[in-house]
Length: 344
Ligand code: AHM
Ligand code: MG
Image (cartoon, protein in one colour):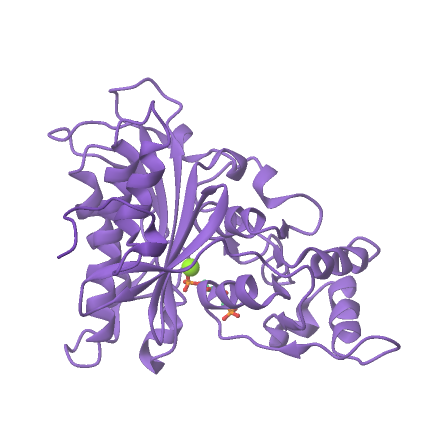
């Protein structure tokens, strides 16, 4: 008969490491931690499990299709976008850990109802990124980032709490709803990936300490915009897909959901790009809840994230729904892009 009880190392555990255990281990390493961060993370995780469940049943439950409304970007809002948004808001607001939230789907800062505590964190999220993929059963995802509030504790949070640069993020992550569902997150020290086991209802550590390769062999960009790009970007794309001396042509992969395209880039290396173009002079992707969280993860995995001139994490936000150009991925691949971008 074996001896009872064990809190031994995870490698010896018969069940592997759950996300909950990972978060608790992290909390125990920080004597000043109050459990607030862990609590917030658990609420975010719960919301993404509810979203994942609904996404997997989308075709069955008649929830596909447009609501008939447009969001503040003027894009059609699909039912699942609003479901995902409302799920995150209602799961997180009651927890007492945040003082304000910002969402792609909601024009103004999302206040925390006064019956709940006004917490010390600030949550920003894109509830369902890549929503154009919903109706074709391709990958979509949720992106989020957490800052500490900068306004006085105990008061309602404000827009100032949301307009913080990416370098001050304390944790960011995404969930990709794909052939399996994965949560990838970082608190700045390394990036860990967890795969969801639907039978158990838990995320298990499957990709510890993700490191992006120094150089990849894939470029990811909507090349249909070629004729709308600046000349430097066009020359870079011409170069990257042309074989040369000591250089193979890069392969193109683009699913049209930033979560899925950046997830592949983190694991396989290469570059994901969404440049500015004649239609979107400041780029298309949103700084606060798309570009910054992903830049935080890419940098924590050893990669580079730039808007073509500056580090994305150093951009000082001025608007909640600000857009930016995005170039992120393997350091050598982003460095090559920048050589073309800045000489245009
Ligand atoms: P969304 O958040 O409304 O779904 O839009 C953002 C998406 C990104 O996930 C993706 O990288 C990009 O828009 C695709 O845009 P395009 O269709 O112009 O290539
Ligand atoms: Mg999005």
